[in-house]
Amino acid sequence: MMTMDEFRSLFHNGLSKQNAGLVQLLGLCPLLAISNTVVNALSLGLATMLVMASASGAVSGLRHFVPHEIRIPVFVLIIAALVTVIDLMMNAFVYPLYLVLGIFIPLITTNCIVLARADAFASKNHPLHSVVDAVAMGLGLTTVLVVLGGMRELAGQGTLFSGIELVFGEEARQFVLHVLPNYQGFLLAILPPGAFIALGLLIAAHNWRLARAAQKGRVPVPVAA
Amino acid sequence: MNPLIKAASRNALRTGVILFAFAVVATALLTSTFNLTHSTIEKSQQARKMALLDQVLPPTLYDNDLLESRQSVPPDDLLGSSQSTSMWIARRGASVTAVVLEANAPDGYGGAIQMVIGIDVEGSVTGVRVTGHRETPGLGDYIERSKSPWIEQFVGKSLIAPQPKHWKVVKDGGQFDARAGATITPRAVVKAVRSALDYFARHRAAIVAPRPDEEKKA
Image 1 (cartoon, each protein chain N blue to C red):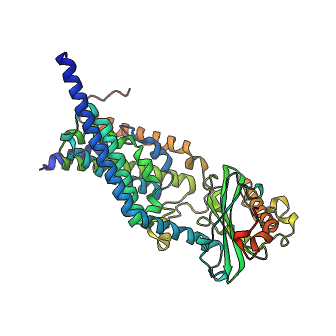
Image 2: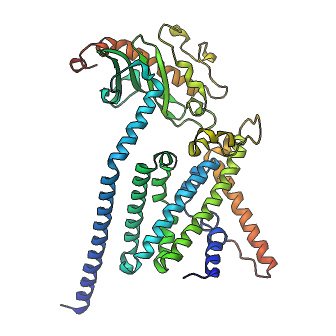
Image 3: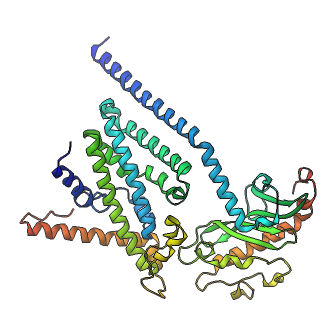
């Protein structure tokens, strides 16, 4: 079983210390492409988390049957098969949700963070730990995505939660916040360059926070490469 | 045989067999999931297609199975198509009442804009929907019905109303609205809808002919 400390340290890793979006910088392609609104970002984040949790669980459960030399092809096989199964199942049984998340699922297959966690963590740890680690990593990625989506949406079109009716139905349209009424829009924020700029700002803020915490704790500041 | 080589080849064989076993299990898993979900997925895709057709063609106009009426249309410049596209033929009783055409606006700002266009037998537009495009988000994407009602202004238009010289955006002296800042996108859509009407006018006789199976190749 898992102690509270282990649990906490896994979450600290996923959310901050080893954050996939801000520290490991893995899986940037979908991160940069889909973070133009909060709703898109949240959808992609949750779908990624679902895939990561099931992939890590499966890899960890099968880890004793996989010889070291062929672990990467086997992991790729497991992840690809699992993602395809999730894709088909969602398409068949939760079609409205699939219409929203469906386009992200094939994107997730190519997301190296899934394989990275499978190889770096799940292949060496108990399934329970592996699933918790994947959820923590996924949560960290989702947080970054949502903040990034919020920044870009606010700067780009002056709203928050636009497109929410695609996820929760037409009645949810009233939850769209027009934060800046009569806003002219700032196209750069919505286009890909906006994603790079906003992510850069987030990474800088994250590093600054870590450095300050390190200084307070009288620990030498890690030198940025 | 050298024992080292023997051990190595035994190891290679072992990992090979394991990899093969994983591949077999994964394939079996995928095959059974596919078989389990195939018919449900097919059904929801059909329903989605039907929902799209419903948006461009009022269901009161026909009583046949619209999805079943699909025909392949060879590539045509008027439809902006370089590959075969689909045409659905709506009938009431034996007579054709309308068609739904797939068409492309090849000269959008971000490449081709894909559309479906409903045209009744008199040659008036019953509805237009954009099904795919790569226009600038927040600028040219108001052609999507989910973003704005802009696309509705085509309903009821035909080749005689407005006059051909008015089948343009307002800025070019025509009748169709366009938002400031993005003129290329609506210009492309207006032109493509007009071309689709032209296409229908030219092939009307063949499409409306009572026996669709004997219809001449367009």
